Amino acid sequence: MNPPKQWKYWLRSNGFKWRYCDRKWGKYYPHRDGRNYRLTHSRMFQIDDGDFDRWGNSVGAEIPMPLTEKEFVAGVRILTARGSITTGEEE
Image (cartoon, rainbow, N blue to C red; front, side):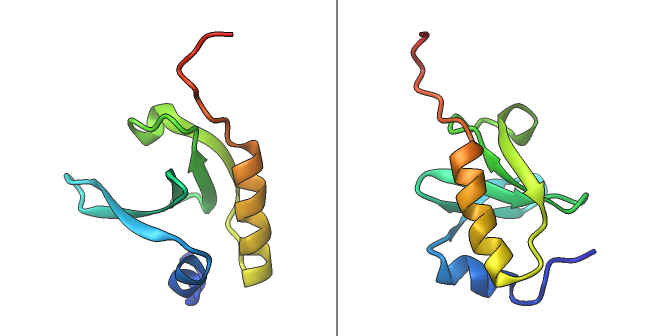
């Protein structure tokens, strides 16, 4: 299943920019406030954990793919709240 046609509009209107992350495959990922986001092939919307090196090590949280703009805005809020921010200091 592909993302809704309005996906890029939702990203732009909510302050996302495009970041080139995967030179091998030529993929661009949306980012905002220093955090990377992606939509997977399994229709999950993900945010990194705040210390991104590659997606296999850095998934902070995920939710099912939003299908409406209202779900998208709520999803970004949920992902931002759930995704941990790594400070680099041990507690």
